[in-house]
Image (cartoon, rainbow, N blue to C red; front, side):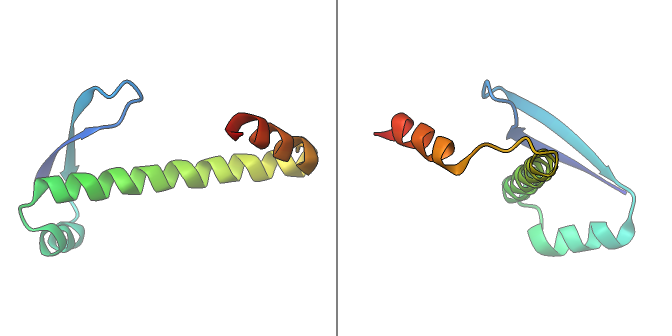
Length: 87
């Protein structure tokens, strides 16, 4: 069993948080050691990227549900908002 100590900023305020992950899956543990060795920073960056991708997938799922429920915005309105924001 491995206890991974990962230091990564996960909150919007930029505060560093210590995250401890306990792995009790020998196959997963072996894969992680082969991929990252003892480079905890590389592992932390990969974990943070994984979490960000999960958030994006979740956001896309919510958006699809909103569109299915008829809660979408007209394209012209969205494009006008984007132009106003960036021009």
